[in-house]
Length: 187
Ligand code: AMP
Image 1 (spheres, rainbow, N blue to C red):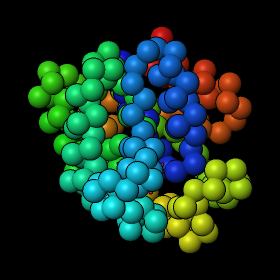
Image 2 (image 1 turned 45 degrees about the vertical axis):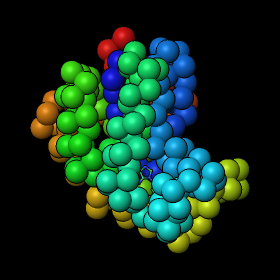
Image 3 (image 1 turned 90 degrees about the horizontal axis):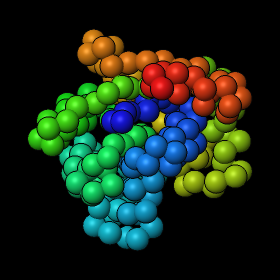
């Protein structure tokens, strides 16, 4: 299983990805989590990423692609992976294709989590109280949704053109969404 979970911030990709990855014994690769860890540890990558991260902007492609390339070489990813939060730009999608090609692999599916904008705003605002992420302030939440619409949404067409895209409703109970994801993956 080599899949991408695609959708706006707050779509619930992380919850589903974590659970499914554990169940199928594949790697859950969340670039947002990796960046938060790098920032918390004050690594060179973390220091470079922090200003972008704090503003709710995308960290430059070269940094994220380098980080992902290394992560894909870790043995746990050889059995398969769920990418959560990557790719977020067309350039990242193209880089991913090259990285996988070098490993003699390709993507099976891209699962798109569909959630309406008012619902996203509601969730991201509610999450603020629970997770206290540095990038969950009003201003950054708005910016992240804008960044998604302008830079990430074009990936829908990119993957539709490559016949990889399957959409699932990202609203409803966690159980219903779980069922839709499994159906989308065809098993
Ligand atoms: P997330 O946890 O996926 O919502 O990501 C949180 C933040 O990390 C984003 O707002 C970006 O600043 C950064 N980030 C995560 N993944 C990527 C990516 N693939 N490309 C660029 N920036 C990213």
